[in-house]
Amino acid sequence: MADISGLVIVSTIIFLIAPAFIIVYIFVYNQRKKRHILEKQQMQLTFASELTKTQLEVQEQTMQTIGADLHDNIGQLLSLTSLTLNSIELDNKAKARQKIDDSIDLTLRSIKEMRLLGHLLQGDQLVAVGLVEAIRQLVSWMERSGRFEIIYTAGDEIAANRNADKDLIIFRITQEVFNNIIKHAAATEITVDLDYAEGALELRIADNGVGFAADEAPPARHGMGLQNIRKRAGIIGGEAAIASNVGQGTQIIVSIPYP
Image (cartoon, rainbow, N blue to C red; front, side, top):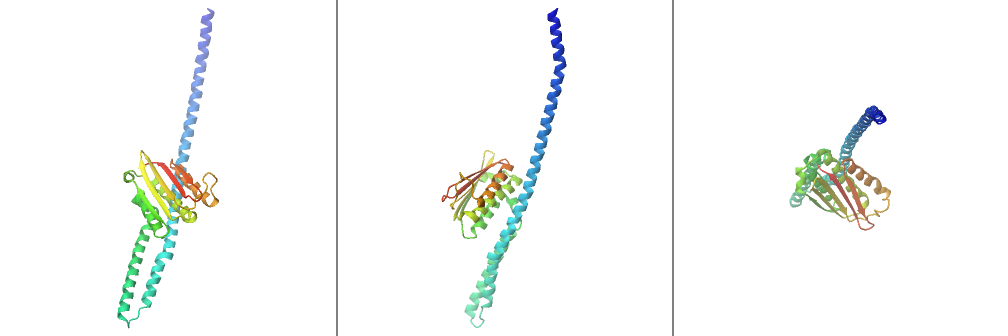
């Protein structure tokens, strides 16, 4: 009889406690679910904010490039055209003909440069042609300075796997790396490799510049740019690895889940 009473008591206690456990479990589950939803919303807001910031930065960088090119390249071509035309001596037909031909050539070169600027004026729309082509045009602008020899390779598979939002951020990362090279690396050779394999895109940019001790904190002039590269890669689920030694150049590898 005592055993039956004890069993009844234990059963009653379990019966009373079980709903409480269920209620606690449901409460904890709902709290975790709400927290997960909030974290997901926060991540989406962060990504949208970074995307807008990146678009503005690409546009700003584009306008800086246009301003520099108008001053350094097209401005010089037009000045040379004006000087050539003003130096024409009509009494000497042979020399006049040569200078007119030279002026025509300079004018055609100016028109060509203006057309290239027209493409660049599209800013972030540059990425609409595809990441491979957008970086190719960026490389072309770098080469036109005459300061760098650049080797650029890109996998054919990338064109078939596209993500416009990620493309824009990857393009901005590329701009950031190039800006660091221009300002700090004192490099003459650059290699750019863009590969896609097994659901991931890898961007590798290496230079033969002065480099720095990568196992130490980077110099202040490098630090902010490198932080931005890592931050942007992280926002789209990727990572950036930086390898450098003093006097041996720098290599940056950015790996992104893609598309």
